[in-house]
Length: 263
Image (cartoon, rainbow, N blue to C red):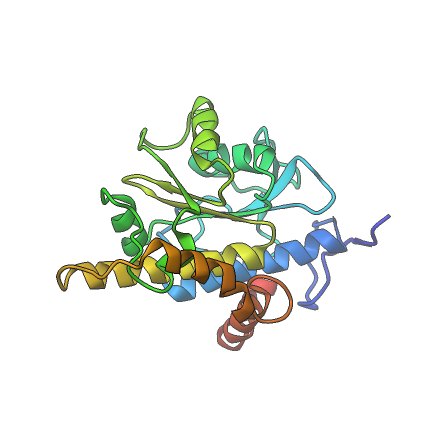
């Protein structure tokens, strides 16, 4: 049985009255809170909207998500909301959860095997590419990571209806990124680190695509070169698994700026 942290104490060293959780859940809370702060630092937040979620270790039908009404810069390890896939709050949190976040994330957490960590974002660059006919084009280094690795889903309005879930999952297929047309991307990963580094690379691909398209006719990378690129890209990965070193580096940076996410 996992050791219980009755006051939620762990890396932060500060007590969290009323929060009972396992060490594994507390670590997940710390990493998710850090992720929210990193997104905010990167300029990837959207007022009180959008979502990042992660499954609770050892609990198949539970995940952590942001409190609806708080900015990403206000999210901490202890104020994250623990809910199940039916939307029930499991940790006594006084905060509501945005239905648009719950509906989409719950379906992917339940049905997509690699969806332990999920983010949905509305950055200008990613929304612009989601709103263009061709989607991600093979015209830059980062875009070549994603060619053939991304699903697309036509816009059906705000995602609050559970019945859209089946179509979302069908259009995702065996991929880990779903570009919601006219809306924004959903990025999934087996870990927060993996989800983060994919989001970072996707954001760069879209930013560079927008800049390139503004300059005229882009140079398209041939299919055979894309195949070689995707085969060899793992050789450029730092130790620790996909995105681990990247995420830990950004955690150190936000810690130097404001470590209140650990509370």
